[in-house]
Image 1 (cartoon, rainbow, N blue to C red):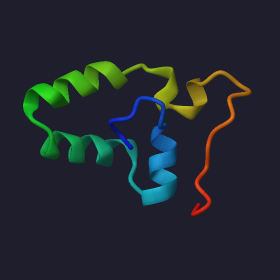
Image 2: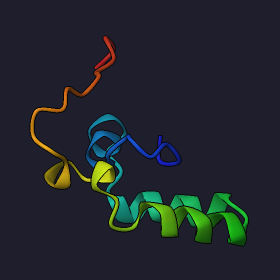
Image 3: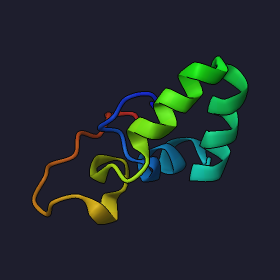
Length: 66
């Protein structure tokens, strides 16, 4: 979910109880250093990774399991 650009960190926290910093630590440990740097560059400041920065009115998909 963290790798996907449109999944906000808040959804990850809601579903798995992991805060953004926890997700970063997991990604740092699981990815190659170059992949982690590429991911951090891609998601830092990205409006879709934070609900508060998203444009209002975007419908967010929720799994039936939530």
